[in-house]
Image 1 (cartoon, one colour):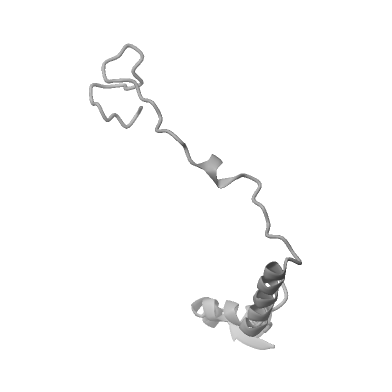
Image 2: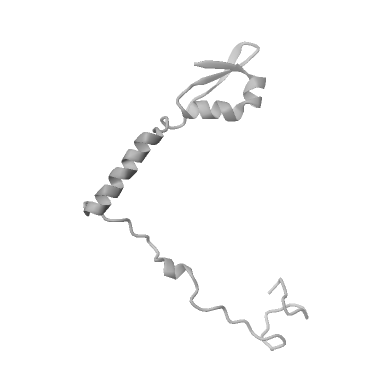
Length: 107
């Protein structure tokens, strides 16, 4: 466990958070008296090598047909408009513009 003063914790917070993510515990002291403790909210992250092994195993299982790829809840084509929105011509009686400018920002 590491102990740091309040001022040092304030100036090196990013570094301390990175250490906490790796599993280190940090005690913050004020005039030598412990006032707070930084601990990870979740277990330490896996190493890059173990992440690569998991990804390689998943890809191999996909290729072998042991698992099926996830399907999205909404097909992507629904997210895009197939046609451009129709805007009334400038000056028509049902024009949504609020002023005389053709490219009104309040339309």
